[in-house]
Structures are given as structure tokens and as C-alpha cells.
Image 1 (spheres, one colour):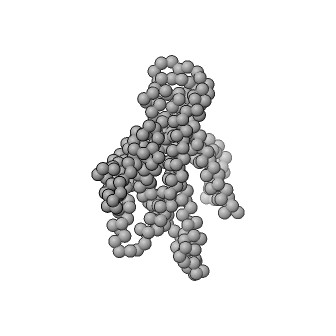
Image 2 (cartoon, rainbow, N blue to C red):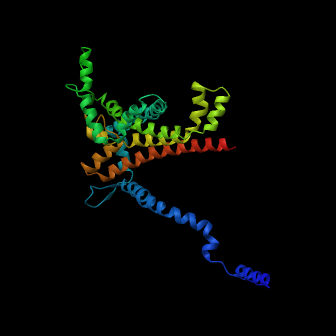
Image 3 (tube, helix red, strand yellow):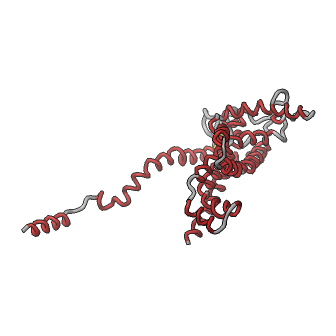
Length: 311
């Protein structure tokens, strides 16, 4: 009798129509989880980007009516000597900033060693990471000062005269990039330290059994396991190089004579001081295009490498 009742209950439950949630929860659940992030991304990134591109087709002072100029802002932009200088400086920033992941990896390998007093050294290397960009800019401005700065003291010790780096159009960009590398190297070091602390001990042990040590051990065993940290470090470094702004504003305001300006700072100057919102939006669009080209190229290479490894 009991078996009959149980079978009837199971049959009734089987025949009961399932709710829409039960029938579609396999795709509703991920959509609900992703929706807040997608909405924020759309509101904060996608819509402003499209509006910026639309604005780049107008001449607008930020207050009065907009006037349609089509691609006029872009035509003027590519014949503007200041734009070419800013673009060249962005390339210099990009190339030199790629030293940050390499320096961060070297420092991470160094401070990851079990050496007496290494914790103090690790704390000193961490220090620039917690400093505000304003502080870094002021410290390096004092360091480069040709009258009383540390650089002047070093040159004076050898009987030479220190160059006025922040006043020299040929040196100023390199001086600012050197200042920006200080905290960026520390940031990359933290990423690689996290990666080094999560290495697979079984893989390391297998490498030791096969006789790997020294550089071959690093190249063939350790470095492949740092691929995720390397990806983040490189991507963040490139984006940071292309949107560099704060140290330029603090140390030189784009000078002397615009020689240290970059696209982000030129965009700021055009929008805030020259009241040319459309022209500034054209600069922003070009900068976005440069970033998008690099990121798409790099992501496609990473995805192809992942696909080859999974085969």
C-alpha cells in the first residue's frame, strides 16, 4: 500500500508543470549574475565612448550650440605639430614603460629569496606603490632640480654640472618616464610575487628530478607558470603608458613649449583651457583607437597561444 502511495506521489510530481524559472534557470542565472556588471560597463564605458566619437564630429565650446564639422577635427589634428609631438611622446612612454614588467619580475625573484633582512628590502620596494602620483612627481622634481637636487649633488661630486632635465625639450619626457617607472615597477613586482607564491610544487619537483636548475629552471618551469601575472602586468603597463597624465601635469604641465605633452594631456588642455570639446574628443578617439588596436592584437595572440596549448 505504501509503495502504491509513493508511486502516486512521484507520478503527481512528475506531471506537475514546471515553472519558467526551472525550465530556463540554466541561462537565466548567468544572465542575472552578469547583468549588473554589463549595465555598469554600458553606462560608464560604452555610451560615453560613443558620445565622445559623436562629439568629435562637431565644433563645440562646451556651452553654446554645436556646429557640424564632420571629419574636420581629424583633418586639423593630423596636421597639428603638437599632436605629432604628443603622439611621439606616447610612443616613447609605451616603449620605455615595457621595462616595468621586466624590472618587476627581476625584483620579485630577488625579494622572493630566503635571505636575512629581505623583508626590509621588500618593504622598501613596496613603498612607491603606496605613494600618490603627486608625491612621486614632487619627489622627482626635487631630485632633478639642477641647483639643490640629488642629481645635482651627484654631478657636483664628479666636478660636472647637472643637466636641467625638466627644462630640456630633448630630456624632459625621459625624465618623467623614469619617475613614472618607479611605482610601476613596484606594482609589477607585487603581481609577480603573487604568481611566484602560487607555483605548482609538483611541477617544480618534476623539473628538479629532471636536473633543471638555474636559468633553464626559470625559463622552462617557472616563467610559463607566470603567464597570467605577465599578461596582467603587461596589459596594465601598456594602458598606463598610453593614458599617462598625472605626472606630466605635476612636473611640467606639458612643457617646455609642449615638448613633454602626451595625447591625454593635450586632450585635457584643449577641453579645459581652449574650450574645444570637439577637438579634444577627436584626440580621445584617436587615443582609444591606439589602445584598442594594441589590446585586440595582444588578446588575439594570448588566445591563440591558449588554444595551441589545449590541443
